[in-house]
Length: 152
Image 1: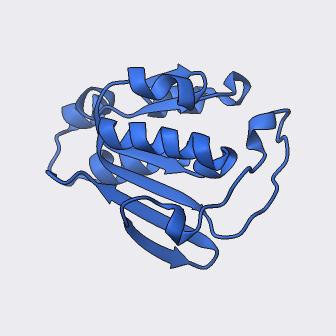
Image 2: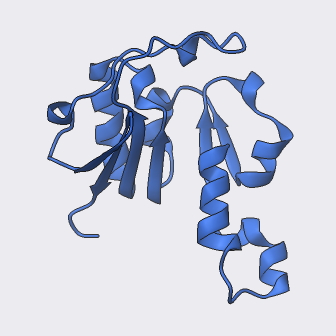
């Protein structure tokens, strides 16, 4: 929820030049979609923020989704083993001008939150494991990685 909300806030609602009509039609002017593997965690709030919520495993869905300006993998890749993460990242980079990754720098096992086994952590990537030397910054125990398509 937080990533979609922040995108709405800073890319759309925060705009000082929009009209009341544009504000009231915010879902029509900025497409923000989500992929959610665990349907029980979807609430009415997500339906208000996102244009579409695609239910399923991101590893199976990524190649079939639309192209985007930005794909955010916020607290996502650490839930995959490294090989699945590389495959997903490779596909995501083909689908978006920018791919933003947020993940911990230290391994925490995680647990099945609200019955969701997908919440368990599999792998925390080191700097050397990210292909093609993306921009990377560390803030406390969080790493933020940005990939930009070469022609963007």
